[in-house]
Length: 154
Image (cartoon, rainbow, N blue to C red):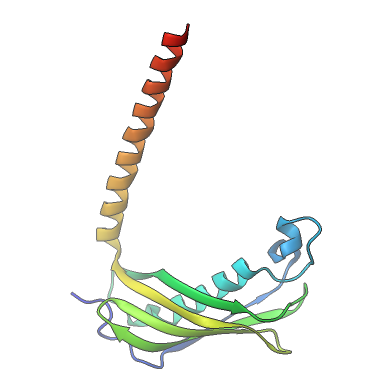
């Protein structure tokens, strides 16, 4: 089953947030300006894209980010509302391509494109659980190897 069959080109959504201090570059890096951080802008854009197609996905399906190409064009200070807009421009197989923009009410502050993949959540979670088990086994093996090495040193 393809999770994208009902997604129309042109579907769009907006997501807004008021910039808070903990969303600024200065919050993460001292000596930097107190402006909306690029990672937060990207997250807002991704949320808009996710919401644009959510109503069209079959039950048990979600979308995840697969690729992002973004330009951060202008700074935005704390207290200003930023709105991201995502619009579907192409749908093929289980991939959805969006144009994305962010605006702060004064000017466009970001633009780019994103590709999201439609996934069946249960199948994805099974794959993830297998990876977690493997990671746990690898971690246990690494701990055993470290303990053996320590015993040999003493």
